[in-house]
Length: 109
Image 1: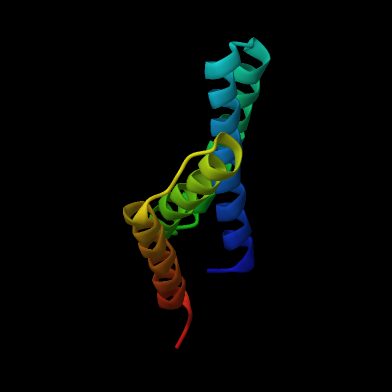
Image 2 (image 1 turned 180 degrees about the vertical axis):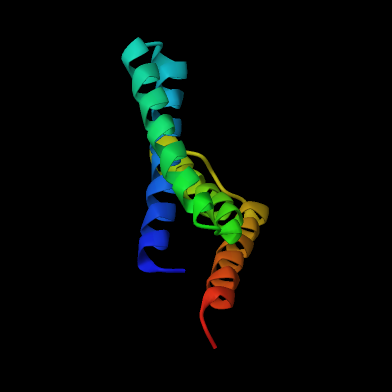
């Protein structure tokens, strides 16, 4: 994968995490501005993600899912006080390993 592909994937996953943050705030506080921010961020993230898929990066879908899983877990722990047990940490380690393995398979030999 090229650097632009990596940045697009990271921007998309970061956008999904940001949109989820505002959606959670909307669920807690009920302010319509948070809902508007969430929809706008989700729309931009989906456009970026569509560009990743349009480049024929089918692996980007799996990598995006794993990146999103990790970002949302970090967001839950850091912002909302979620607690991780050994099973959660093990799942996150598998997600990191899958991203690493996907990245290795895309490099030329």
